[in-house]
Image (cartoon, rainbow, N blue to C red):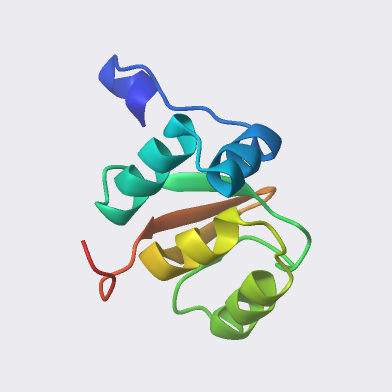
Length: 105
């Protein structure tokens, strides 16, 4: 967590970030490049209700809930995150992503 390391966190709202990515704005391209290069140790998103409770990767039902989570998304940001990240944990109301082991840098 950047705050614990005396660093400034990246905090972007979904609406503007989606718009920046869709329009190809410099900010959107920068965030996309950073996500693909695994610049962020973790990305924290808001849970949309697909996860019934706090969970960790490997818990029973976790993979099924993750598939439902990705399928329910309609944001231009989600294909990028799904290709570069994996859901690692749920801490209601947050979904915690980390770099996918099989994604390209």
